[in-house]
Length: 94
Image 1: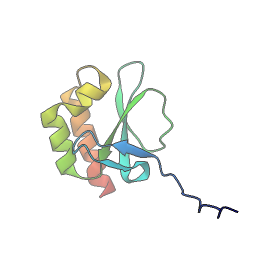
Image 2 (image 1 turned 90 degrees about the vertical axis):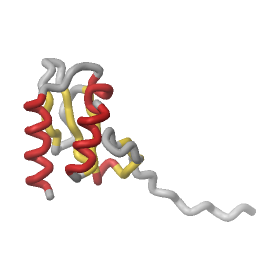
Image 3 (image 1 turned 135 degrees about the horizontal axis):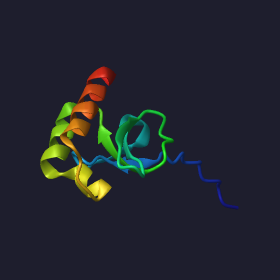
Image 4 (image 1 turned 120 degrees about the vertical axis):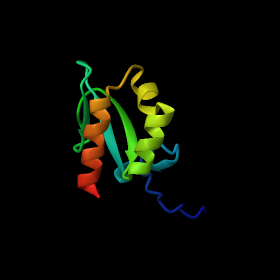
């Protein structure tokens, strides 16, 4: 008779667009672009639209900005005001 295998809790992983590491979804901040093209920080994780994930530090935001990680994820241009808004929200979280 086979021994039952211990259950593994599968934590959803997402890739940070700044550093490129696969990290637990709950440790990242979700950046959302809705169908109208507005870019927002999604704290609930339930907003409709395309999403990208970032680590909770300013270094990853700078890497994403330099490497155009958000532009690639959203398949389009990201206005400078959106980066300012994201940076403000990251500052409030830390």
